[in-house]
Length: 287
Image 1 (tube, rainbow, N blue to C red):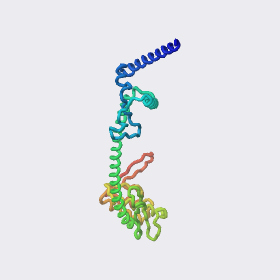
Image 2: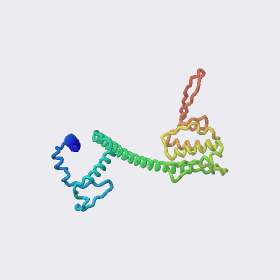
Image 3: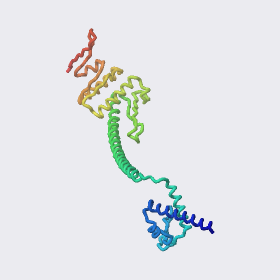
Image 4: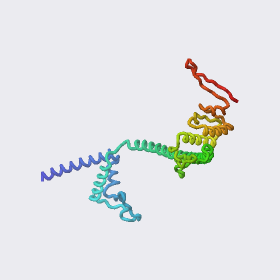
């Protein structure tokens, strides 16, 4: 009996120590007096329904047993406690600076979202500008090509009497990326490729192309650098007649060594080197 009483006293002391520890823990962690804790959360109180698990849908009927408080059952509540502790452990350590970090990240996210919207708006504006520029470029190029192609046929037939020349688009369906091929057939020949023509014929075809651009889009003045160097007298005379037509509305600056070209000029400017090696400009007005 003495041993039994001793064991009872030791067990009672352990229980009292455990109760004191729980009361201290309740005060430190929860800030609740033991009496109030027992009164509000004691076993005589009904246990409120558990919140739904992830993916679980609660019945809509408030009188459903799942939505109603239930009596306290220690085994059931210990099971809930273990499940809650496992879920708590899965959460990991609590970050006391989480709210500040969240506020900073939220502000950063808002800033980046605004920047993204600005970029999207800017991109839309740029795409609209690109579209308008492409439309304008396509319109200007199409008009310039049509005018130049029309003039080229006339100029080529004058420089090559009996010949045929025209401009052909490589990709007519896409005016923004298409190229332009020159087809030239001098009189008496069947070839149209420029690579199969003689040097003089290629030069005269290039001059025809140049003059066609001048006529399609007139300018106050033109500069030509020895465009007739490879031409014979007959072709040179044809080119001079076209130059005289251009003179009526524009000013021509022609670098040449051909005397026949000089004869139709209004003024001549020559560069001569004296015996001392110093260049000197000589000018002469003919008309």
